[in-house]
Length: 407
Image 1: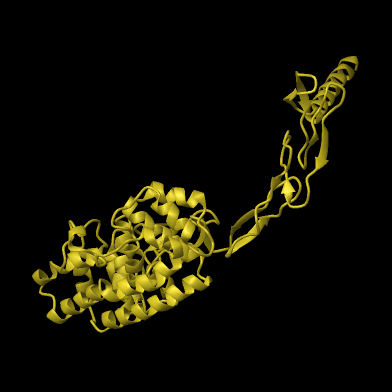
Image 2: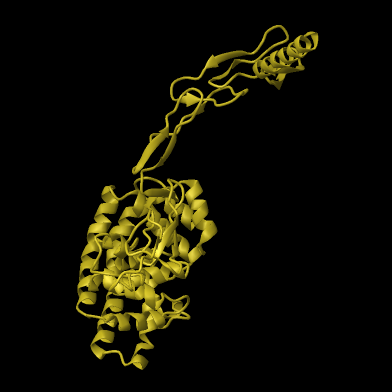
C-alpha cells in the first residue's frame, strides 16, 4: 500500500511540474537602454503582443491583439500580425481570423490553387480514372484504366470500374462510347484562345530586359500579380515565355476588370472569324492526327486526338489540340507550331482547300490587324509605360521563327 501511495505521489509531482512548465513564459533577450544591461524578458502568450518590455524592476506588459490582428504563439513582437485580407474570387474561408489564428482561405469545391488563381480540377476523360482526387491545393491525378477496368465518362472524381462482361458490350472499356458527353465543355475548353495567344505573345519585346517583367507587372491595371506568383513564372519559364504567362495569369485574375473585358471583347471579334474559318474546313479525325503528327516536339497521340474529334465540335478541335500540344511542349507557340506543320502536310495528300484554309488562319493571326489591336488596347492600357514596348516589326518576323519557318 505504501509503495502504491509513493508511486502516486511521484506521478502527481511530475504532472504538476509539466503543468507549471507549460505555463511558464519563455524568455527573450532584451537590451535595456536605461540600465545598459542585457535582460531576459518574459514573452507574451498567443493572442497578445508586447505593450511594454521588462525592466530591472518590472515584468513584461502584454496587451490583447486588436481586431483584425493575431499572434498564434509566444512572441516578443511590438505589434500583432495583420490577418490576411478577405478571400479572393472562387475562395471560401476555411478558418476565420481570431486573436490567436490567422484567416485561411481555400478554393471552392471543384477547384485548386494555382499561381494565385483557383483553377478547375482536371476532368479525366473516358479510358482514364481518378487515382487521386483534387483538393483545394492540388489537381486531380488521372491514370489510364488497367486491363479489366474501364471508364466511360468524363469525371474529376470517379475511378476506373471493374469490367463486367455482358453480351453485346465488349467495348465498354475502350475509352469512348456514345455521343458527345454533357461534360464536353470541360473536355473542349482551353485556357487561352489563338487570338489571345497571338495578342499576348505580341507583347513580348524584341529584346527582353531584366526589369521588363517587373515593369509590366506594375503597369497592368486591376488586381496585381503577387511577388510570389511573379517569382514562380520567372523560375519556371524562359524570358521569352514569361510575358505570355504573366498576361495569362493577369487575365484569369481580372476577368471582371473593365480593361480586361474590353480586351476580351475585341479579341472575341478576332476569335469568331478564326473559328468560323476553321469550322468550314471539315477536317477528318485522320487529318487531325496528321496535323498533330507533323508538329515538332512531343506529339498529341492518335487516341487523344480521336477523343477530341468525337467530343468537340469541328471549330473547337484544332484550337483544343494546339492547346494540348502547347502545354505538352512547355507552352510552345501554337501558331508557330501550326506554321511548321503546314510545311509537311502536302506529303500526306492533304486537300488543297484545307491547307489553304489553315494558311488563312495563320495569316490572320500574323496580320497587321493584330498589330493594330495590340497598339489600340495594350499600349493604351500601359499608359506611361508604353515606351517600354518599342515595336516596329510584324507579329512573327522571319528572323525570329527559327527553327520554325513560314509555310
